[in-house]
Length: 230
Image (cartoon, rainbow, N blue to C red; front, side):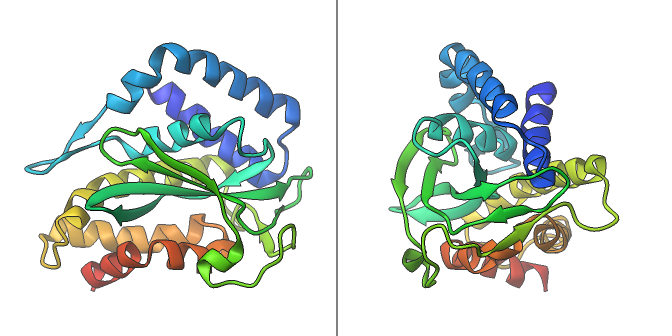
């Protein structure tokens, strides 16, 4: 499991650095697709017990599952966003945005507005919806294919450090989501500390051009984290 999670993280880092080739990504996706034929159902059912709360699929597994389930519809050279928790019809879903991205060696990734969105159930990891989107869905006026900014490894941060911090961010989602589901505003010190750490890591690891998209899509979640972190 750790090896598969690390593979997912490394692919994200490669794209951030602009060193991903179509061949590398295609080979990985083909391997993931082959593996998923036998394991996808089990993966969707893999959950982590949260103390006294519901069961949720680990966010690190949802990240990989979203990539697998979106393949074939989402263009190969797309940037997958960080997870965005949202409620729909009483169910907690995890959304991912997909942006066309131009990756060149040793250069930040050039990003265009999101063109697709994926929703997965937080508990089972099953696909709820995959559809095309435009910037207007998020209150923005970016044209399709317009350069909205760039994204790369933060200055003075190594690839290894980025991977470690990203893995930690996924773990913080796992801690916070059960509390978010209950809409708790009064939590114990452990949850408050997790919220503060989340608020420190998310801006560091997320794509600056997507900031208004993240806030529009996950307003309820991010506002809740802000309140808990006070």
